[in-house]
Length: 275
Image (cartoon, rainbow, N blue to C red):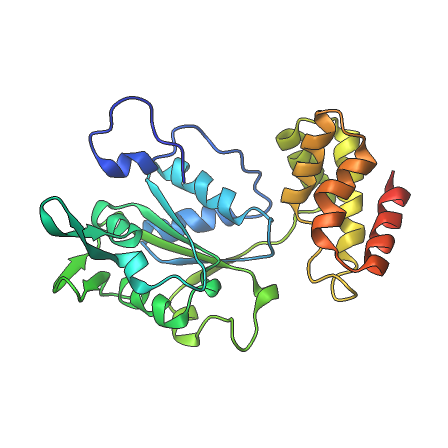
């Protein structure tokens, strides 16, 4: 969850405001495109591989637009009630409690459904009426129709590399969104990001990026995904704490990515070759 603001909170949604600028290095026109979509209150779909900066981008844009950001990490057991809310018992009896989506809709926050494809399709159907001209959310259990606050925006993300017959976005969902495509940035920008985020020297960051490029070349040849920018930052942070670079690569990149001994040996050789 986003860090809460300091001091007393008058409005609970203020707990979701981002008060300091999250570092984000643009690599194309994504900032301008997002701002245009927000000005028109169009829902946004962020597509890209794991760890390439989608979540950081949303955090940066929420800070830039001065809007609260309610983030929901989607999973296969998530129900519609987890999103919209439910009746719960407390000292005063049965009381309705808004879910994160409903809270965002009422209060004009940006609601970010992270890796939405992980949620069941019958759960994600509840967002449909928010993503067209209606901009409302029906609370069937409460017999209430919540009209979206003028500042509300819905953002979802997913990794196309994980799509399958069982896990993919329905066409009826896809066609409601404008999309921004993400990928790992080119080597120079990625090294700049790693150096900045991990606190390592530029040359160390360039070595880590070379390791990532080798691993990404193995995608589809024993690896489902190559090393993400997030993994490179973790390896850099270990190095900054005194762990030798090759060991840091093993801990933060090779071992998390690979289980098969043969692929692990190939990855370890690739790391050694980059040092």
